[in-house]
Image 1 (cartoon, helix red, strand yellow):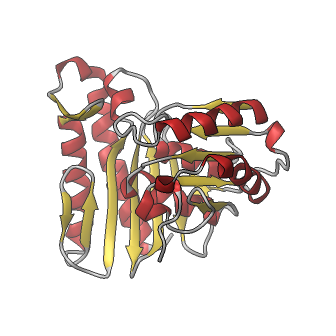
Image 2 (cartoon, rainbow, N blue to C red):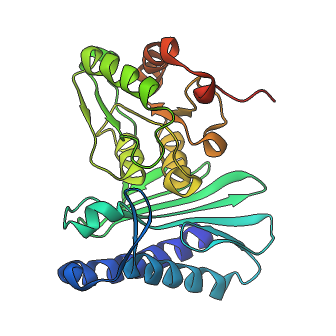
Length: 268
Protein backbone atom coordinates (compact mmCIF):
# COMPACT_ATOMS: atom_id res chain seq x y z
CA UNK A 1 0.00 0.00 0.00
CA UNK A 2 1.26 3.49 -0.87
CA UNK A 3 2.64 5.21 2.29
CA UNK A 4 0.28 8.20 1.91
CA UNK A 5 -2.69 5.87 1.47
CA UNK A 6 -1.57 3.98 4.55
CA UNK A 7 -1.74 7.14 6.67
CA UNK A 8 -5.15 8.03 5.20
CA UNK A 9 -6.44 4.55 6.12
CA UNK A 10 -5.11 4.97 9.66
CA UNK A 11 -6.90 8.35 9.89
CA UNK A 12 -10.15 6.92 8.49
CA UNK A 13 -10.11 4.00 10.92
CA UNK A 14 -9.49 6.34 13.87
CA UNK A 15 -12.47 8.45 12.82
CA UNK A 16 -14.58 5.36 12.10
CA UNK A 17 -13.93 3.90 15.55
CA UNK A 18 -14.91 7.19 17.14
CA UNK A 19 -18.13 7.31 15.10
CA UNK A 20 -18.92 3.65 15.84
CA UNK A 21 -18.52 4.16 19.59
CA UNK A 22 -20.84 7.19 19.47
CA UNK A 23 -23.53 5.35 17.48
CA UNK A 24 -24.94 3.77 20.65
CA UNK A 25 -25.27 7.18 22.25
CA UNK A 26 -26.81 9.35 19.55
CA UNK A 27 -29.62 10.60 21.80
CA UNK A 28 -27.10 12.43 23.96
CA UNK A 29 -25.04 14.12 21.26
CA UNK A 30 -24.88 17.87 20.80
CA UNK A 31 -26.27 18.62 17.33
CA UNK A 32 -26.21 21.95 15.51
CA UNK A 33 -28.22 22.87 12.45
CA UNK A 34 -25.93 24.45 9.82
CA UNK A 35 -28.78 25.22 7.42
CA UNK A 36 -32.06 23.68 6.30
CA UNK A 37 -31.75 19.88 6.74
CA UNK A 38 -27.96 20.16 7.17
CA UNK A 39 -26.74 19.02 10.56
CA UNK A 40 -23.40 18.74 12.31
CA UNK A 41 -22.83 16.80 15.52
CA UNK A 42 -19.98 16.83 18.01
CA UNK A 43 -19.03 13.47 16.46
CA UNK A 44 -18.46 15.08 13.02
CA UNK A 45 -16.14 17.61 14.65
CA UNK A 46 -14.27 15.08 16.81
CA UNK A 47 -13.85 12.71 13.84
CA UNK A 48 -12.55 15.55 11.68
CA UNK A 49 -10.02 16.57 14.34
CA UNK A 50 -8.83 12.95 14.66
CA UNK A 51 -8.30 12.75 10.89
CA UNK A 52 -6.50 16.10 10.62
CA UNK A 53 -4.22 15.30 13.58
CA UNK A 54 -3.30 11.90 12.12
CA UNK A 55 -2.49 13.38 8.69
CA UNK A 56 -0.61 16.48 9.89
CA UNK A 57 1.37 14.44 12.38
CA UNK A 58 3.08 12.74 9.41
CA UNK A 59 2.67 15.48 6.78
CA UNK A 60 2.76 18.77 8.73
CA UNK A 61 3.14 20.91 5.60
CA UNK A 62 0.16 19.52 3.70
CA UNK A 63 -3.00 21.60 3.25
CA UNK A 64 -6.46 20.55 4.43
CA UNK A 65 -9.91 21.08 2.92
CA UNK A 66 -12.42 19.69 5.39
CA UNK A 67 -16.19 19.95 5.68
CA UNK A 68 -16.42 21.38 9.20
CA UNK A 69 -13.21 23.42 9.48
CA UNK A 70 -12.76 24.66 5.92
CA UNK A 71 -9.35 25.29 4.34
CA UNK A 72 -6.07 25.41 6.18
CA UNK A 73 -2.49 25.58 4.89
CA UNK A 74 -1.09 26.18 1.44
CA UNK A 75 0.58 23.27 -0.33
CA UNK A 76 0.47 21.38 -3.62
CA UNK A 77 -0.77 18.47 -1.47
CA UNK A 78 -4.37 18.95 -0.29
CA UNK A 79 -6.29 16.44 1.83
CA UNK A 80 -10.04 16.63 1.11
CA UNK A 81 -11.98 15.33 4.10
CA UNK A 82 -15.56 14.49 5.01
CA UNK A 83 -15.38 13.07 8.55
CA UNK A 84 -18.94 11.72 8.45
CA UNK A 85 -20.78 11.65 5.13
CA UNK A 86 -24.38 10.82 5.97
CA UNK A 87 -24.73 12.72 9.26
CA UNK A 88 -28.54 12.75 9.01
CA UNK A 89 -28.54 8.94 8.66
CA UNK A 90 -26.13 8.63 11.59
CA UNK A 91 -28.31 10.84 13.82
CA UNK A 92 -31.32 8.60 13.10
CA UNK A 93 -29.43 5.37 13.69
CA UNK A 94 -29.75 4.50 9.99
CA UNK A 95 -26.52 2.58 9.29
CA UNK A 96 -25.44 4.18 6.00
CA UNK A 97 -22.62 6.66 6.51
CA UNK A 98 -18.89 6.80 5.92
CA UNK A 99 -15.61 8.59 6.41
CA UNK A 100 -14.20 10.01 3.16
CA UNK A 101 -10.57 11.10 2.70
CA UNK A 102 -8.87 11.99 -0.59
CA UNK A 103 -5.48 13.47 -1.46
CA UNK A 104 -5.09 15.89 -4.32
CA UNK A 105 -1.59 16.64 -5.65
CA UNK A 106 -1.26 19.66 -7.95
CA UNK A 107 -5.00 19.42 -8.65
CA UNK A 108 -4.97 15.69 -9.44
CA UNK A 109 -6.64 13.13 -7.15
CA UNK A 110 -4.00 10.57 -6.14
CA UNK A 111 -5.27 8.71 -3.03
CA UNK A 112 -8.75 7.79 -1.83
CA UNK A 113 -10.29 6.16 1.23
CA UNK A 114 -13.99 5.63 1.95
CA UNK A 115 -14.57 3.74 5.21
CA UNK A 116 -17.93 2.39 6.37
CA UNK A 117 -17.54 1.71 10.11
CA UNK A 118 -20.86 -0.13 10.50
CA UNK A 119 -19.95 -2.80 7.92
CA UNK A 120 -16.17 -2.53 8.37
CA UNK A 121 -15.83 -1.98 4.63
CA UNK A 122 -12.68 -0.13 3.61
CA UNK A 123 -12.62 1.15 0.01
CA UNK A 124 -9.20 2.41 -1.13
CA UNK A 125 -7.51 3.57 -4.31
CA UNK A 126 -4.16 4.94 -5.45
CA UNK A 127 -3.97 6.59 -8.87
CA UNK A 128 -2.70 4.05 -11.40
CA UNK A 129 -2.83 1.14 -8.96
CA UNK A 130 -6.49 0.17 -8.94
CA UNK A 131 -9.28 0.27 -6.35
CA UNK A 132 -9.88 -2.21 -3.54
CA UNK A 133 -12.53 -3.22 -1.01
CA UNK A 134 -10.59 -4.51 1.98
CA UNK A 135 -8.14 -6.76 0.04
CA UNK A 136 -10.29 -7.46 -3.03
CA UNK A 137 -9.66 -5.68 -6.33
CA UNK A 138 -12.71 -3.72 -7.50
CA UNK A 139 -14.16 -3.53 -11.00
CA UNK A 140 -17.22 -1.59 -12.10
CA UNK A 141 -20.16 -3.72 -13.26
CA UNK A 142 -20.33 -5.22 -16.73
CA UNK A 143 -24.01 -4.46 -17.35
CA UNK A 144 -24.41 -3.07 -20.84
CA UNK A 145 -28.00 -1.78 -20.81
CA UNK A 146 -29.39 1.08 -18.76
CA UNK A 147 -32.72 -0.78 -18.71
CA UNK A 148 -31.11 -3.56 -16.62
CA UNK A 149 -29.15 -1.21 -14.36
CA UNK A 150 -29.47 -0.23 -10.72
CA UNK A 151 -28.67 3.47 -10.37
CA UNK A 152 -27.82 5.39 -7.21
CA UNK A 153 -28.77 9.01 -6.63
CA UNK A 154 -29.24 11.59 -3.91
CA UNK A 155 -32.17 13.96 -3.55
CA UNK A 156 -31.41 17.68 -3.16
CA UNK A 157 -31.82 18.54 0.53
CA UNK A 158 -30.27 21.98 1.15
CA UNK A 159 -29.98 23.60 -2.27
CA UNK A 160 -33.11 23.44 -4.38
CA UNK A 161 -32.24 25.67 -7.35
CA UNK A 162 -31.86 22.60 -9.60
CA UNK A 163 -34.86 20.69 -8.25
CA UNK A 164 -37.09 20.92 -11.35
CA UNK A 165 -34.33 19.65 -13.64
CA UNK A 166 -33.40 16.98 -11.09
CA UNK A 167 -37.01 15.76 -10.79
CA UNK A 168 -37.31 15.53 -14.58
CA UNK A 169 -34.07 13.53 -14.79
CA UNK A 170 -35.21 11.28 -11.93
CA UNK A 171 -38.59 10.66 -13.56
CA UNK A 172 -36.90 9.55 -16.80
CA UNK A 173 -34.29 7.45 -14.96
CA UNK A 174 -37.06 5.68 -13.02
CA UNK A 175 -38.69 4.60 -16.25
CA UNK A 176 -35.49 3.66 -18.09
CA UNK A 177 -33.66 1.63 -15.41
CA UNK A 178 -34.20 -1.46 -13.25
CA UNK A 179 -34.41 0.81 -10.20
CA UNK A 180 -33.17 3.89 -8.39
CA UNK A 181 -31.75 3.93 -4.85
CA UNK A 182 -31.17 6.87 -2.54
CA UNK A 183 -29.55 5.78 0.76
CA UNK A 184 -28.09 9.18 1.73
CA UNK A 185 -24.28 9.07 1.58
CA UNK A 186 -22.77 10.15 -1.73
CA UNK A 187 -19.31 8.90 -0.69
CA UNK A 188 -20.69 5.39 -0.18
CA UNK A 189 -22.85 5.59 -3.32
CA UNK A 190 -19.73 6.30 -5.38
CA UNK A 191 -17.82 3.50 -3.62
CA UNK A 192 -20.72 1.14 -4.40
CA UNK A 193 -20.53 2.17 -8.05
CA UNK A 194 -16.80 1.33 -8.05
CA UNK A 195 -17.67 -2.05 -6.50
CA UNK A 196 -20.30 -2.82 -9.15
CA UNK A 197 -23.17 -2.76 -6.63
CA UNK A 198 -24.60 0.11 -8.65
CA UNK A 199 -24.17 0.36 -12.40
CA UNK A 200 -24.26 4.17 -12.22
CA UNK A 201 -24.84 7.20 -10.01
CA UNK A 202 -25.90 10.83 -10.45
CA UNK A 203 -26.45 13.79 -8.14
CA UNK A 204 -26.38 17.59 -8.25
CA UNK A 205 -24.77 20.26 -6.05
CA UNK A 206 -22.39 18.08 -4.06
CA UNK A 207 -19.28 19.38 -2.28
CA UNK A 208 -15.69 18.31 -3.08
CA UNK A 209 -15.42 16.38 0.21
CA UNK A 210 -18.53 14.33 -0.66
CA UNK A 211 -17.13 13.09 -3.94
CA UNK A 212 -13.32 13.41 -4.20
CA UNK A 213 -12.46 9.96 -2.81
CA UNK A 214 -15.41 8.19 -4.46
CA UNK A 215 -14.58 9.57 -7.91
CA UNK A 216 -11.02 8.21 -7.79
CA UNK A 217 -12.38 4.82 -6.64
CA UNK A 218 -14.59 4.68 -9.74
CA UNK A 219 -11.95 5.65 -12.28
CA UNK A 220 -9.48 3.20 -10.71
CA UNK A 221 -12.17 0.47 -10.93
CA UNK A 222 -12.52 1.07 -14.69
CA UNK A 223 -15.52 3.40 -14.57
CA UNK A 224 -16.12 6.91 -15.86
CA UNK A 225 -16.94 10.07 -13.91
CA UNK A 226 -18.10 13.38 -15.33
CA UNK A 227 -20.39 16.29 -14.73
CA UNK A 228 -23.87 16.26 -16.24
CA UNK A 229 -22.37 16.65 -19.72
CA UNK A 230 -19.65 14.07 -19.17
CA UNK A 231 -16.91 16.68 -18.76
CA UNK A 232 -14.39 16.86 -15.94
CA UNK A 233 -15.66 19.90 -14.00
CA UNK A 234 -17.44 17.73 -11.39
CA UNK A 235 -15.19 18.61 -8.41
CA UNK A 236 -15.82 22.30 -9.08
CA UNK A 237 -19.52 22.18 -10.00
CA UNK A 238 -20.55 19.34 -7.67
CA UNK A 239 -22.77 17.89 -10.41
CA UNK A 240 -21.80 14.24 -10.90
CA UNK A 241 -22.68 11.43 -13.26
CA UNK A 242 -20.70 8.18 -12.97
CA UNK A 243 -20.89 4.56 -13.94
CA UNK A 244 -19.45 1.76 -15.99
CA UNK A 245 -18.52 3.11 -19.46
CA UNK A 246 -21.63 1.79 -21.29
CA UNK A 247 -24.16 2.82 -18.65
CA UNK A 248 -22.43 6.20 -18.14
CA UNK A 249 -22.96 7.07 -21.82
CA UNK A 250 -26.64 6.06 -21.67
CA UNK A 251 -27.22 8.06 -18.47
CA UNK A 252 -25.82 11.19 -20.13
CA UNK A 253 -28.36 10.71 -22.96
CA UNK A 254 -31.21 10.60 -20.42
CA UNK A 255 -29.88 13.69 -18.63
CA UNK A 256 -29.16 15.78 -21.76
CA UNK A 257 -32.74 17.00 -22.54
CA UNK A 258 -33.12 18.35 -18.98
CA UNK A 259 -29.90 20.34 -18.66
CA UNK A 260 -30.49 23.86 -17.38
CA UNK A 261 -27.77 26.52 -17.54
CA UNK A 262 -26.85 25.81 -13.91
CA UNK A 263 -26.23 22.13 -14.66
CA UNK A 264 -24.13 22.73 -17.76
CA UNK A 265 -20.35 22.79 -17.79
CA UNK A 266 -19.18 26.36 -17.19
CA UNK A 267 -17.40 27.86 -20.21
CA UNK A 268 -13.60 27.84 -19.81
